[in-house]
Length: 150
Image 1 (cartoon, one colour):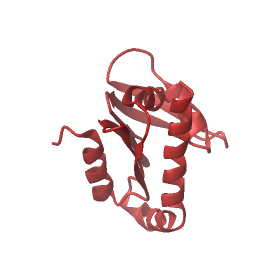
Image 2 (cartoon, rainbow, N blue to C red):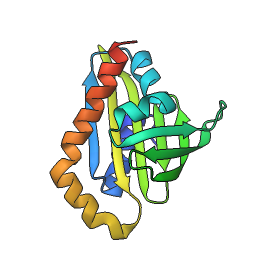
Image 3 (cartoon, rainbow, N blue to C red):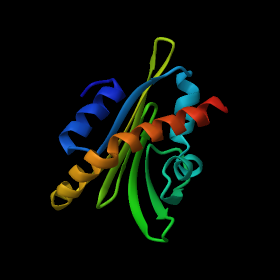
C-alpha cells in the first residue's frame, strides 16, 4: 500500500465509487491543516453541517470508537482509524475519510464520503452527481478556514 495517504484515499474513493471526493492544494502548513482534521470531536461538527456532535473515545490509540449524532438526533457508531495524515471512519452505512501530505508551499488535502451497502449505490451515485463535488469542496474550504485560524 502506498505511503502517501492522499493517494491511498484517492484509490479508496475510486474503489468505493464515493459520492463525495475532493482533493486540493492548500497554501497552509501541513501541521495546521492536520491539527484541524485530526481534532474529530471539536472540528467534525463544524466541518459536516448535518452533524451535531462526534464523540470520540479518549486516549492515544490509533483505533477508536466514536458516536456521530446528527442534527436530527439520529446517531451512528463508527470505528475510527487515526494516524498522521490519515483518518478513516466507518459505520455500518457510511465510510468517511481525510488525508493530508506536505506539498511544496503547503498541504495536499483530500476528503471522501461513501456508502457501504451496495444497495445504497444508486443513491450515492445520484448524490455524487448532484451535490458531492460541491459538498466536498465546501468541506475542504472549511478545513482551510479553520486551519488559517490556528
